[in-house]
Amino acid sequence: VKHTVEVLDATTKEQLCFLDKVDPHSTIGDIKSLFYKSYPQWYPARQALRLDTRGKSLRDDEVLQNLPVGTTATMYFKDLGPQLGWTTVFFAEYIGVLLTYLVFFFRVPYIYSHTYALTSSPHPVVKLACVCHTFHYVKRLMETIFVHRFSHGTMPLRTIVKNCAYYWGFSAWLAYYINHPLYTPPSYGELQVKYALFTFAMCEVGNLSIHMSLSNLRTDGFRVRRFPTPTKNPFTWLFFFVSCPNYTYEVGAWLSFTVMTQCLPVAIYTLFGFIQMTIWAKVKHRAYLREFKDYPTVRMAIIPLIL
Amino acid sequence: MASSEEDGTVEEKENNNKKRTKSALITAWLTFYNIAMTAGWLVLAITMMRFYIQKGTHKGLYRSIARTLKFFQTFALVEVGHCAVGIVRTSVIVTGVQVCSRIYMVWFITSSIRQIQNEESVILFLVVWTVTEITRYSYYTFNLLHHLPYFIKWARYNFFIVLYPLGVVGELLTIYAALPFVRRSGMYSMRLPNKYNVSFDYYYFLIIVMLSYIPLFPQLYLHMLRQRRRVLHGEVIVEKDD
Image (cartoon, rainbow over all chains, first blue to last red; front, side, top):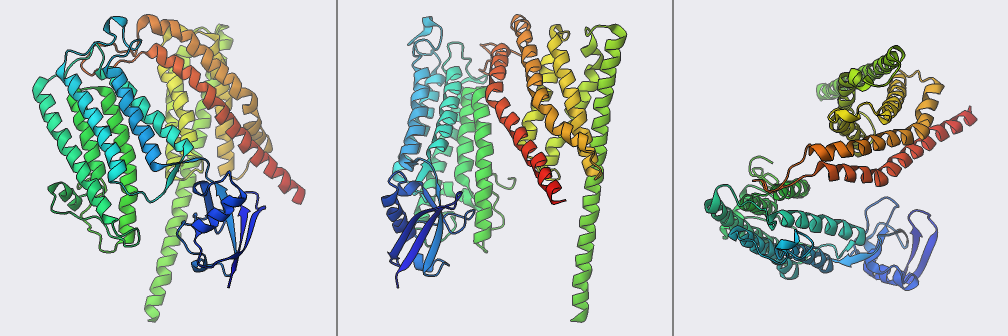
């Protein structure tokens, strides 16, 4: 039995496309490809198809005959706007941050007073900070390429512009002060820097361990649902206490960087990041609790025993 | 079996009673709050008028009402709480931006920069704020008491068309007048080097504040225009049915 699919605009309700003789085994992804043939400006990644105007968008892998629609399906279309692939997104964000920081580190002319143009800071902590900052974002780039498995294919253009403005802007702001000719090194000197460097390194390794363990959860596709648990790697033992130790480690890394540079803009950036990551962690934590009845009750979202 | 069914309905009744008491308490608090704020701004208005009538000048007027203004304008923070908790159905962000910009104006511009307190622009925005707030709070009060005179509704949704831009002009002129004094005194500013490795120039910050009116004011103005269309437009339809 062949199905028919009618696609209406979600806001105007006018009929955009009428597909008949559709194979009942075709997926939403297939329907999007068919729709794309009639509307070449709306490539599949920017199409959202729903069964009712305000509902959740249908996943690309859903099969037509499994939907609660019968043999004639009516779907509503919404344009998600221009989309970019995740890899492109992260590259733009992270490379931008990296380069922005380096612009200040090398004291490109016209940023600071011209006597200091293209000079380097006499303080070793300033070089160390540049290495740490660069390492942090190179690690993130590597993870994007080799570790992360994304559930959505793309991200809307407006979000990327907003994110880049945020990341690059903050990077410029904190790099300006750290690499400033009038920078003041930390009050407790080398001791402060060494301890901060140690905790920074621990948190980076921790963050990487968590990302890898999360990535291993998805080796059997997205079908099997399991929640993350501690493994033999001691850095993953934080899973005993929190649902999102990757965020915990990330905050830890930035706190370390704050102490290492003793720079208030870094502290403010850490605070903003902490607030955002707490929101994400709480959402994830609630999702885990809802989905898994045997979810460990001692776990908090981001800070052991507290948050 | 029968007794457990009865327990069920008893619990239901208890819950309903709790909900009714809670909603009655909320209404009582909101009514009290709005009456208090209406009264506060009325006091401000009357004090301002008396000052001008008695002294014949606006010089020194701000100093005479500064404390009352600070109190009632700052107390409006409570409204952000109302939105956050959900007992008032307005966006937390819109309310937050409006209240914070008012509080900022009072505490960090007019009250802290004495030299501009006698500017005419200060009187301009004070008058605008006073008229706006008295209209707004009395509207809420009458609404809660279910006895809303049409002219208050009309005022609330029409005065702003003129008052809002006038208020913005008053605020911007005041900030602009403050600039040279801020630059000379270096107030609220921090220079390098210091152990926090940060700097802050209040003068440039004020310029950014002034520039931020450009994207923010149209958004808030359009929001109010949309609300006006919804409220007054909606009422026209009801009258037709009658």
